[in-house]
Length: 61
Image (cartoon, rainbow, N blue to C red; front, side, top):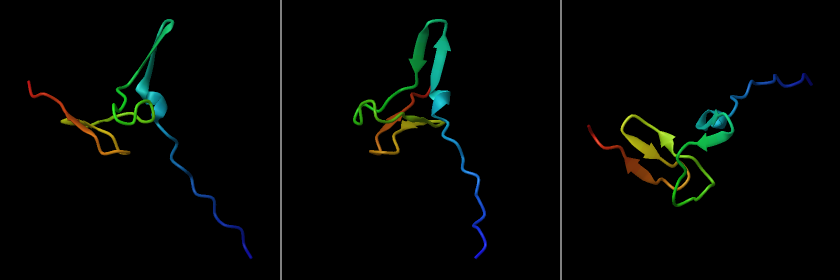
């Protein structure tokens, strides 16, 4: 039997949510319901948690 072809997996982009300024580390907004388990996805008009479906709408300027 021939070996299975290895598929390339997409790496997690969780590291994009962190910013390092000198000695301080800031992170993206976390879900208030899931506590520190998941980040809120930043969409054009809202912040969204994919785990518990929590939504925060951005204010229109």
